[in-house]
Image 1 (spheres, rainbow, N blue to C red):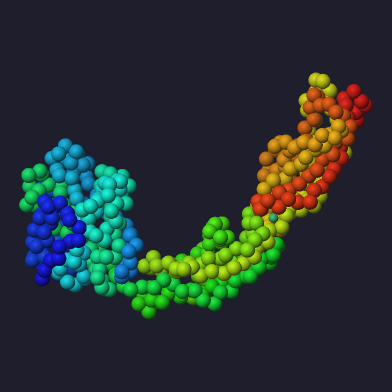
Image 2 (spheres, rainbow, N blue to C red):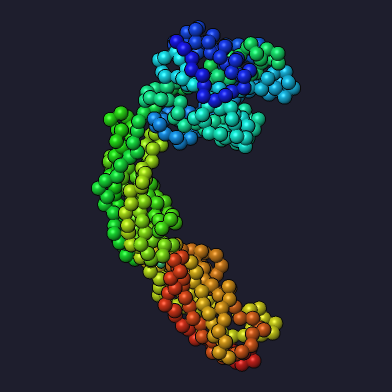
Length: 423
Ligand SMILES: [Ca+2]
Ligand SMILES: [Ca+2]
Ligand SMILES: [Ca+2]
């Protein structure tokens, strides 16, 4: 039985206390799985003091990726008050790590309740310099560590120790035994692997409903690992436009069902489908499995217009006249691809102008009677202050989210003065 010095240089007092405690604990039979609660200076320190603990269960041997170890203490109001008043020392949290079944620690690290802003020079060398903690003083303690706590594959036990919560003056010779054990698994591990894609090379506008699939296998399935999720990013260059989760159909087949609305919002171009999958060890396929696809987005179409041929100026004391314009608009990437339906107008003097108010809507809001029925509505308003009577030419357009603009529809409307005979 022996102890290895933890990698980090902890404050001397803490280290001394901890080492004493560990020796006491180790010689009192920690090889028996489970640690009895103990009481320190009248403050019960059973595992009830711990509110929750989050430790990743699977670790990849030799990985330098930092992962969060989290612990929150559930202190009573009395304990919190006593800490504020200086009657109890604030708690500190340590985790000692050793191979399962061996009553020996390889190393230890500290969790911090420091808000994460301070670089901690006092932690193990496999711990990140900042803790990842969010709020100082809220009794949530965190550290970001990599799998450097293990020098070989196997199960390891994290022994959680809470120090403090003692009356000042007793701190150098009193402490607590570890009050919680969490067993984790360390193994050499490979991320999932892709094969046998059934993916389109091109997606023409309005393509039929189709199911895409990829086979995804985790190389470590024999030792209990498995594929957790399969994600596809749709990219062009370095820009990621979308991401999609594939669904497991029958292992190892993962699928995604796409219809023509898949292309909504995408410009016609070549894209990369970039696949990654992750396993229980949070191992992610790297580099991603990639497939090139050409995707087409076509312009909206204006199918029909309903609008009056004649509009009348109201009398001097009359409210505005409102005329209903309706356009039936389609887009092969779905109504969700339609960005705007709008018009320009040329007045009898030949001036052409647009206006942000010259737009249609299909959301059921006034003046659109029914939302989502592909009939886009506009209320054309004629007030009694209008001038330039005669023939107005309207030009209607729809533009989609990819910037495609429809062929226009033109419509002529005669504006009649209120001084002329009206129907
Ligand atoms: Ca794996
Ligand atoms: Ca379109
Ligand atoms: Ca409508």
